[in-house]
Image (cartoon, rainbow, N blue to C red; front, side, top):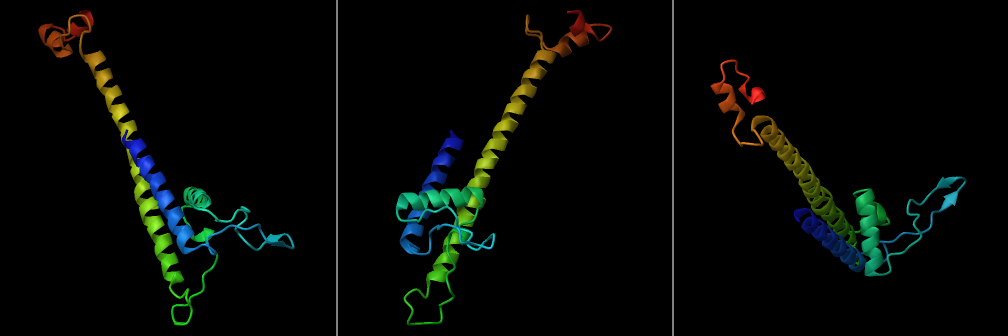
Length: 164
């Protein structure tokens, strides 16, 4: 149940980052066909889909976030224009840095590690149950329910449980 709840939270976070990417970076947050010249790919964004809707942005965030753990590669280069007061996009680089950093911290680091921790804890719990069951099978008579120690203490040879 906790794994499903965390998975739903992860999908919600992907959706939120898709919406924010669609609102803040409508022209920068996109994929285009690869530009290939002389056998070398010059543009790493080769998926052929633009982020023209919130749904597409969420899919781009899901794709890039899960495969690479970084949204920075999905965004085209944004010039450092903080000093130019006449440029309306002067704070876009700061928004991009916050956007990619928050995605890395919240989704890649925290939520994914929570999911991995839940999976590891589940396997540890299964192992503990198996060990407890093995201990019960080897340490208790399944017919009368008495512990192995009682039989071994009552016998003179110390093998009372096996003789029982």
